[in-house]
Length: 76
Length: 76
Image (tube, rainbow over all chains, first blue to last red; front, top):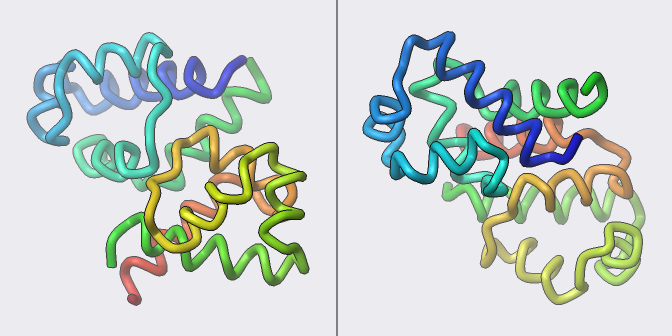
């Protein structure tokens, strides 16, 4: 599984677990809703700063997100 | 401390600990030497894929790099 696809899966999972819509996550992270949508579909590669911005509203830490992505890539 | 500056510090630290020159790290990661130099000086924000590419030749994991960046940002 490619990195951006694994990231998209993890992002969608964390967002729904946090009970947030894409619009709510966009507002709370300062990112555009369209960009959140592209990330979730694995169509954009996030930068480290994007991961930091997303971590707070998702109630997690940047390195936990990256660890989840690594696990997702190894298990498929 | 800004994210890219903290990342640059951590990258330089990991690279020297691994006993690699910027050129050797470039060759082993598939990234350009100039880009490694820009990253180390905090002049570029790495993407998640860049962090994955760097982690292997630095004998670490992507999430460990990100955790080090978070710690660096909080301690300065």
